Structures are given as C-alpha cells and as structure tokens.
Image (cartoon, rainbow, N blue to C red; front, top):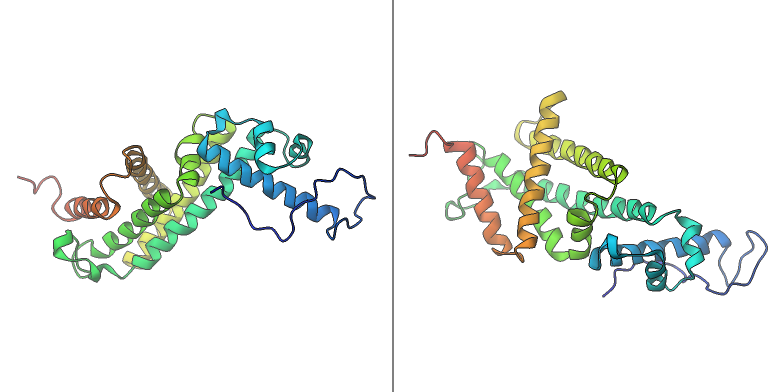
Length: 247
C-alpha cells in the first residue's frame, strides 16, 4: 500500500485561475499548495523506497501523486531537493524509534536471562548492554516494518551527490551524539564531551548501520530476536571477557 501522509483536504486539481490568496473549494491557496507538496513528498517516499531514487523522474513522481507536472516545481527545484526533504523525514522517524528503544530498555537489563546471554543490571556492562539492545532492537524493527523508509536510508541516499553525502554524515553525527549521550546517562548519569563522544557516536551509528544493512540484504535472516540475542551475546563477550580471556 503506498505510503500516505494525512491531509485535511485533498488538493484541488482544477487549473482555474483564482485571485491570490482567495479560498477556493473551501481551502486557501496556501493550504492547497501545502497539500500538493505533501502529496509530492509522499509520492517521493513511495517511489524512492520501491523503485529507487535513480530510477525516479519528476513525471513519475507527479503521476504517482496525481498532480500535473508543473506542480512539482511549485515546491521543489530539482528531484534532489525532493530527496533532501524525503530523507529528512525518514531520518526523523528512525531517530525517534531508536532513541525510544534505548530509553525503554534503560534500567531494564534485569529482564535479560542467562539463557539469552544477557547480563543482570548488577553485572559489569549490564546496563550498557540493555540500552544497546534497545537501540538495535529499535533499528532492526524499524527496518523490517518500514522497508520503504529503510531502503531510502540504507541505500538510496548513498553516492547521490556531495550535498546528499554531507546531509547523510551530518545526521549520522547528530544521532550518534544523541545515542552516546543516552548510553552514558543510563550507565553513569553523565555525558561525554569532545572527541570521545564523537568517536563513541560514530561507533554506535556505524556498527548499527552495518548490521542492519547485512540483515536486510540477507532477507531478514536470522530472525530478529535471534540476531538480537547474538548481538547481546557478542557485546557481553566484548564488555566482560574480551579477546584476552578467550582461550
């Protein structure tokens, strides 16, 4: 089913010229323009996330939106401008889900059992592991339940242009910093600053993306809960035993 944003009113497709700002069919010009813009963005999400950004055209976007092609340029100068807006919305959605996942599991590591390879809240690294599991559980769930959004974030924005590359990196830095802050607050009640915060954020974002990309390409195998258990077990080894203790 195509992704849709909710509108109060469907935009008018009658090309009748009206006086600037005059209400038409119950909606002001500004409201109609806003509605058309949302239709174009919704169509962009759908096409970029199913057919791919490089296969999309302005004409195809407008056909999907049910709008005359000239309305595209009412809101966007280029297809790349639309990709920027689409990506902003996709990342905002992912950010909310992942941060909520970490917050939900903060302080909840006592629910992890030894059979799952988890640590209790009192064990070394237990609280950190719970928060990290929350981050990854949120990311994996988001990717599986929102494959259109996931394709845009994980694949379609890569290598488009220097502008999009910088947008991608900027969001990675911002979200990485937020993840680092959430993890440190849950574990110690403090936050990192400077280089250590940036490096921790890069590690969290980079490792998370790599795991999710491999999982999506591998047709979501192993099942999500199995993968989460393996992530948890591996993190437990890193946080407690480490390579030196491995005989």
